[in-house]
Length: 123
Figure 1: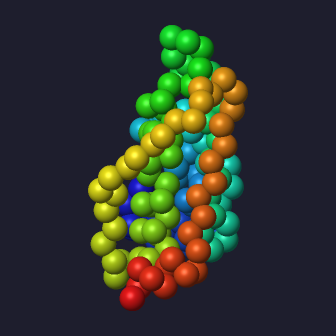
Figure 2: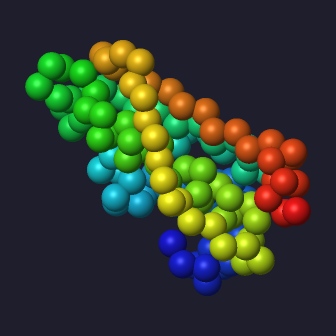
């Protein structure tokens, strides 16, 4: 979603609502099968779910690791871009995932950015 569209929508909706709906309507994010179901007012907490479905099921009947990665990868970057504004340049340069076990039911992920972390970035 471009910046002018977001500025216009902010006249009618809270930023947290725009964030949530924007992610859930974004076609590449929808293809990951992830869904944002909660965004806090200050945008510092985002919760997503990845339901097991025919769209993301692998040969073994569990959630494909690529779907897990695609559903979780953009969240922190977009959170930081939205919270910090235009004064900062935010790039997602690397990711590392260690799968603990196979996922044969809906997965949930919580993304929380603390005030302390934001202060460290601003310094």
